[in-house]
Amino acid sequence: MDDQRANRESECVVGTIIIGETKCSICGRVLDDLDDTAGSGPFIADPADLPFQFCNTGFHFSCYKKWEHRAEFEAKFAAADLPKRKPQKN
Image 1 (cartoon, one colour):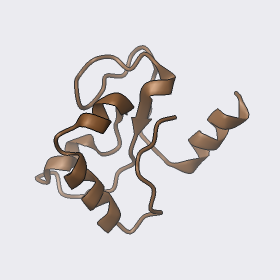
Image 2 (tube, one colour):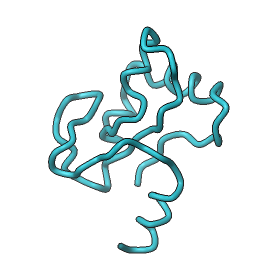
Image 3 (cartoon, helix red, strand yellow):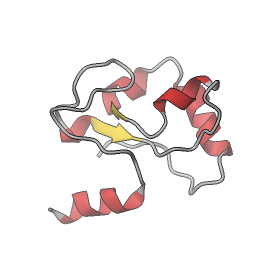
């Protein structure tokens, strides 16, 4: 594993993402490019909260950048008691 990837993996805890198998939680297509894969850890506890279904999942960073719920997702993330770090392209 290269140093850059090892650093990325140590920065956040996300559910298991298997490149080539896991589907993007935003568009539903398979995550097949590590460089376009991002994710978030579990930071919303209420299943009735719209962004809940996207927590602890993987997604295409390209989908995330244009996602209609991005602002709400980021606001919930900012309000969570976690290290403050927006999802970033790997």
